[in-house]
Length: 268
Image (cartoon, rainbow, N blue to C red; front, side, top):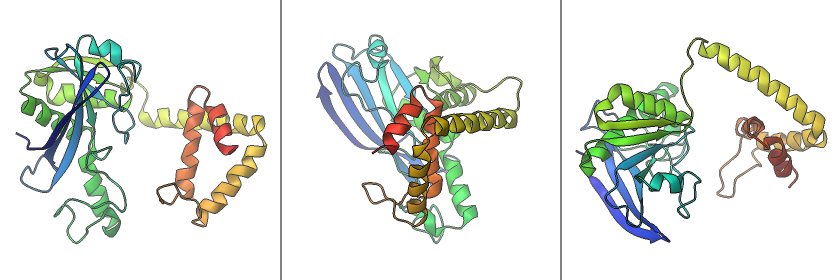
């Protein structure tokens, strides 16, 4: 059984929200070892206090759960709230859960001789990050389910959340009433290396199409890359943006109207 370290309730128009932070083992195989915090927000429509729970498993990986502004934000929320109370789980390492980053503190005793991930060896860092996979996310959700006294709840998996949902079904199906997927299913047939090779070829083609459409952006991006390489490119919170992080903007080319959004960003 998990220990809830904080619980607060507040409201939005037509919605009741309960914020919970609970303790969870960094390594669920060592429940008495180093501990982290996991955050969840339970969203309930007015009058829906007795409805069953639906857990939203966020995509990414590495993204926090959505932050509702109203019953229709995000777009699927209103429909879900007609039949459920929705649990927005900040998966460990994201949002208000214990974060992961080179300069963030690691739990006491998690990495001998290191107070932050940057101070650890590469092998220590890799071992630490193994505790932030889908199997641990599922175990965290089970701690929350037990705390709430819920026999079973439903799952909604989006993108990476779909893979997490499959892990949930394989490891703790007794806690699941039903599972809904909007993406994130493993391939049947092709090897993942083949999938990523095809993705690489597609991104090369989209990049060349982008430069042909917006040729001036190539020089803009090169100037940004030079600034990033020299350590002069920083986010508003002071974080340094390296070249590798800058190149991740190419991810936008995989989305609808992503080329236009990237062009507007580089145009600033």
